[in-house]
Image 1 (tube, rainbow, N blue to C red):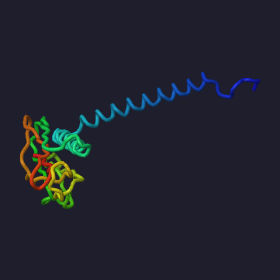
Image 2 (image 1 turned 90 degrees about the vertical axis):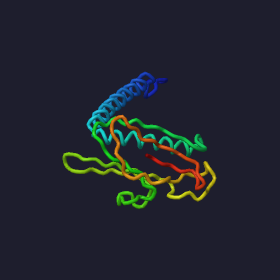
Image 3 (image 1 turned 120 degrees about the vertical axis):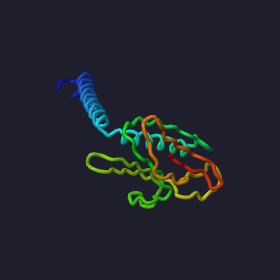
Image 4 (image 1 turned 135 degrees about the vertical axis):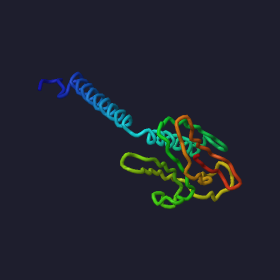
Length: 169
């Protein structure tokens, strides 16, 4: 190596960084395409259920971040042509999959037989603080009810005398 010559030139370092960036971009594009294809192949009720779960997660996040202090409502349009049932259980209800915790379940028929999917929420079953906005707990159980294209799921946070309650109907 000659005097004043660095072992790694700035130009060479930039080429390495740009090449790595291009490789990362290609991997992200392929991953994105795979995600879109996988989501497109999901049954319509599952896609509706995911939208309801995303809305529920968003409203819980907004409450936890303090952006919601009292009543709030989010309406989630449903697009499935295949009817299905959805239920919100304050305490897991009759669903073993819920383990006695607040959860939302979807029920529908597939060519392979009936399918049930449940999502447990990490909120309290019953509020311990009656002050609105302090903690979030599960609202009233909404038994299995039919959902179809054109209807909507409603995610609500309601201030009650029992505290701030989350319900999905």
